[in-house]
Length: 538
Image (cartoon, rainbow, N blue to C red; front, side):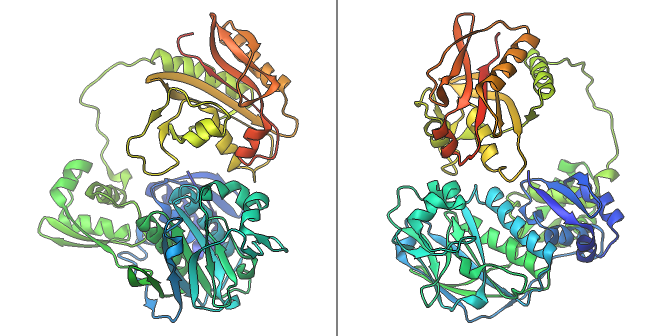
């Protein structure tokens, strides 16, 4: 889940309340305060609330929750003269685009940090690691409209962000850190998406990198924002979150005319979605006895527009709320607005005596050993892709269970191994200090049979076979498990520095130094060692 840094002075200004009050009430809207420092707090929010991935979004929500400013936020969109044309050549690569201009911004360090952090958090949350949605933010004063969004020849050159020399788009995927990290999204395409201005100068190469020309600086006042992707609704929602957050900094939103084969539209569209909920149904579900007017008041605290009409409530959902998909989602906000501390505690109607399941008891033992060895537990997704699970790991496909209707290319199958997910975690945390040591316990599904696996990995400059072997030996000794070690053929590990784990004559796992090709597949630049075992039933 995303962790957002909130600077106290900035937060007080955005909310209009004392920091102590804000921090006291913040957990009640669905946040977990990770740490409190002298000048800032790091706060974790649920993935279903991407509108809270920035101090501006938090400030907007807290103003309502504290009763400072309730009801539906309204953002004026000024008519603008900026136009962008979507060329048919980009249709097969990355077909959807939304754009906006935000003017009269006054950037300071917290505001710039907030914008960059929001961009990356949305790439992860809504964007499925940029595959579904990617966001570009540009200083519009350095380019000349109108703009074009097209599929370009990969040999087209420009200077990418953080570089001083021009590179072709093909070379950017090989030499730029962002290209190496996200280039796989464009594999198999003959043309790459590109946004250029009237002089053919490059603004953005989505979903990879912006051009250096439009870098946002301290003196930037007017922004052009592009959001591209493969899901029309997700693209629009991401843009709405970004522009309304900037509007909270007194930015003035200006519409962009988008021309395509489908016709002309003005972006962004910040009109609220309209819902009608039943007060009786809401009370039955959340266990309250609120009158419709009281329920409407709770929703206004959560920054909805709400009006009671008999037992029904007409609700206007802000355009930046990407999480409202069912009336029950609105009921949840009624409960938050009412205040969880106001619910009366009751004893359960049934009394049972429980005991740990043997599998969970064994997991607890394993966790204790791994934490004692200095490893941090993670909980990766159980869905993955054939590319990550097999191809990146240099393993043949075996016994996989496919998802019938996957929502994205990232989640096409149930994992047969946990280790690829740990390497993915390393790849998105390379900005954190080394060494990093992580493990995960959980289900894998092989040949329609659920198994319990343990995977652990360590990455740092001195990672070697001796390190991971010592971890394996300590683990099995502490768990009183007898094992043998044989020569391994597992392609995920380096030949000559890998081994299989044999328990009661059956291979139950492997460990070793991660092969250099596997490290490159995940964009890792440091040596790593890892292990994975199937531990249930032994």
